[in-house]
Image 1 (cartoon, rainbow over the protein chains, first blue to last red):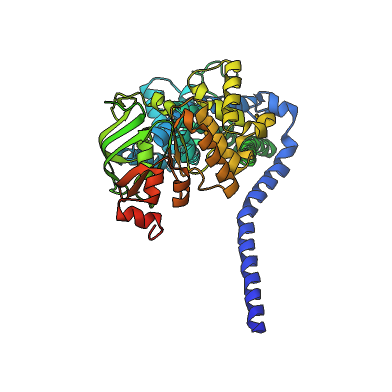
Image 2 (cartoon, one colour; image 1 turned 120 degrees about the horizontal axis):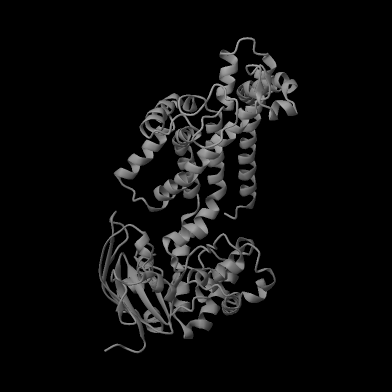
Length: 286
Length: 255
């Protein structure tokens, strides 16, 4: 009796240790990458690196146009994808009847999220750059990134709206609210933290992508900052690709430094999303 | 023809859900004004469905077929042309679980008025205080009206739900097992409260047990599997029911 109990306990300990080890193994690469990039990239970071134009065939100077470009692209993506995404999520979650068409739309959205990003790039090239004659521009690239980001925003926003208890809606309606009043005053505020998290995660992906902007708005090198939405722009992810593959004699620490800047940009957004989620969870009353 | 004491008249009402579950069959019932009418019977009898038909809350559910009439102040509220928003203001509802909106105590009460477009602070303050006093909650919350409504106890929350309905100055109050989630003390408070205010309103109450039905009923209607078995003044229906099934249920032979 005693013996079998002890062996069960040993088994449990081995089991838990294994699970712990596996968990650690999945986290390890992330920690290694981040640590490696920080160690290698930090020496390159300076005020000049962040605020100066590239010089000497990008082998010297700073990466300001790439930083600004990524900022513009992220902003442009937000302008298109946030209102559209939230509107679509509200429609699907609150208004759409549960029928074949709605289910089809939902499946389409989920599948949209699985399309390789280079396909979005080619689609953007065909539709925005060529057909709509926007040229390779911030506008065309932002629109392309928006289409890629939309499914992420729609599905997380829909999830957030759905998680608001049905009872709130019933009560609100019973007090003489219209459906829209109920959504505007009760459902949307409650779902907002979840929606914002989805937006940030979607934009974060957009900020880090290379392929969708490759044919639609990213420039190899520009001597000046973009002046309008119709200009092409440099951007961090594409810049990293360029300086790692196409510039001979590229100082290695500039490459690591640029990667570090992108990583901080993206992980910073991730951190904000996490903080919003935690704050909302602590405040939630249901 | 219209009885001055009659607030709502239900004529040949039948309701069927699309999945064929709980339904009502040919219900005819007159609900008297300024009294408590109790709709009781075992689960699945159609009481809640009837209650929700009275303020068209069934519109949200998967109802396949409705026939018959519900006359409220002489107007058939099942008419598609009826303004349901106005209807729901006149016929308020308290639910079985105290569901407070994720707002402050004050905002929970002012919510319905703000929906109507009332923005004047003085009007809202006045209405909130009046409603909270009538729901016997004012003395317990007057100094923390800005706190989240979820911070007060379950019994207080249910009185807040009542106050929220009262703020709209309704004519009819529907209560769907309002005390099923409450302790006996809170239950007694709600019951006492409704007895106090019933003269100014028309109250339709679905109780969660027979004892409460008997305690509260001025008028009572017994429902069994979608059928209205019998109805009459509370004192006769619980003491001398005409139908054997009512007799069996009231005396606890089934249920």
